[in-house]
Image 1: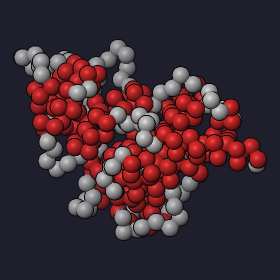
Image 2: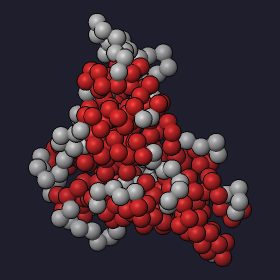
Image 3: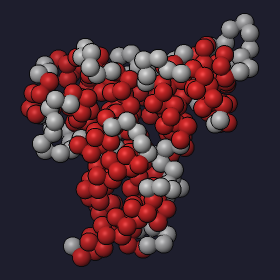
Length: 298
């Protein structure tokens, strides 16, 4: 118990010191995400944000000229690439960029957990988007549900990044996986909320980061309830760090709050297990095959 107290105290100090400086999500990725989910995204802003990121612009130009999308004329500008690919595909490329740049580590223990976290984030994003589509609630946008699912566990990524950076300086942070998982479980929601507030993201996202595990939650916040259900389904399917195959999602307060039926939950489970889009976002396309088009459609 004494060693756990030392771990938590040092980890809290390290987390507090990194809010302003740790590159959790690049500014370009975050701003692109928030612009892409708008009803009327600013194409000029999207173009400029992509141009400002050399790696991202290169990947988008390469994809637009691949055999999958190529037309009679070679695409040479980001603007024309956006027109050819469309917003859904740009969203996909941004997601891949986030994965390649952030969910990896030279530390094997951290890297293994980051891969599980990326799997969970992607599955939760698509699960929340599908649930929103099936509910047909005009107050909740599918694209917002996708981003909320993708970002809800940002606190876990923060913790893993901080431990990766600081464990070489503080021996207590080089901890057994059992202690690491306990620290993540206890600290990620509060620190994810603080981080997202300091990143000045729209209020809906830090609230979901903060409240996606609390026992008493706002049942009127439909987006929060949707993400919580997607989160439970991912836990049941063992998609992520937390594995709870015996959990009964249908008996949850969240399902009761939205009055969902068993066929709806089973459809989401089947979709997450078998959808090729999710598999490629998690694992990447096979090395000898062209990337297939990605869509948020179920």
